Image (cartoon, rainbow, N blue to C red):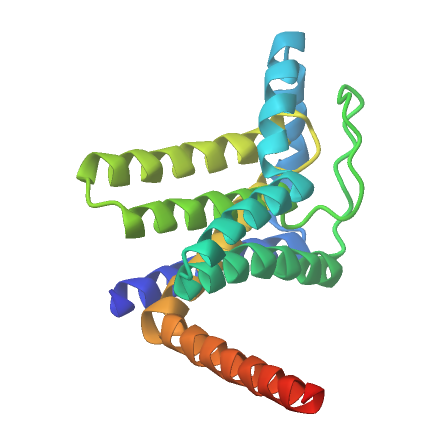
Length: 232
């Protein structure tokens, strides 16, 4: 398992590095980005735009943040600190990583005249793509952790992959990202998700959480006893 995760991290890291170098040096892939983007935009339809505008919302930062809070509360009620830490690391870490990478590369957004959607901020890598893969990938891992049924495990894995791919493609269809932005988003988020899985594999956060909980309970008990003593 650990070797497999390290392999994923290495492969995704190499893919991201290749894409980043290409974009930074304006090489072949970066030069083809506007050509592919323009071609795709020219083949869009009003119905397609409406559909992918809805799909792209699944990668929206605020939507995913809200869903993360809801799932986080459920995990807190279950006192599953391992999965809680994993979820927070995956989602918040991907958001922070995306912010850092955008500031490093400072790539401007595409400017396609036919595009009806306006997006702000820098382009490389795609934030919606990174957030989608990190969140839906993490949710799939959590469901797999709790489920004993193979069909459910396969279904949530396929669902997470398809949803992430659709969100990534929606950014291309709507003309707010280049192809290399989306590819780099998948690579960076995939590597980060593997790092998070590796973290909960190597570290027992449930044990750490229980120690913290016990310590807080002891401190609360001391405070109550001290307060009662003062009242007497």
